[in-house]
Image (cartoon, rainbow, N blue to C red):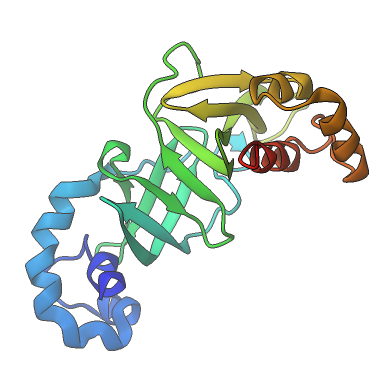
Length: 233
């Protein structure tokens, strides 16, 4: 029922062909949609999402440029199969209005987090005010232990070097953090993470080599492994 209610949080009380295509068999629950609609509209939806510039090569999205069914978490309750798109250039989460065929912003401060269809999990976190890329505070959850390993996914643009229809192109980047009790510790080297987590350097580096883990080559798996080991201490 949570899936049914939330999926249509942006719809109007009128039924169109596009509504029927999206809702499918769930139209039997229309009275409940109407009852919950005002609550969800006020709770999480923002303005209309502005399409990215066509003069920039590539796209501003994380993982996929198409809407995919993800999961939203609101006040500890998960709502599955919500159409989601994450613009990591603007640090904005977008959903789809099936009746009016519009992309709608989700207010980041109104929800706990979300998961994309590929399983990647994100949370909205406050703080980290000295970090220039914090923006709306959307961070990917890599792993959890005594600390939480985070990745900040973002895109920048740079000028194209050759004559083309594009003025700029998107460049994908990431920064990494270990987070605990609201404190962000940015990690740029493996030794930083080992020291911060209080792990035995000699033993930990040996295990890292055995597992073929290197921060520069694969920081995601490197940090996942370390935070899992920190929880075993």
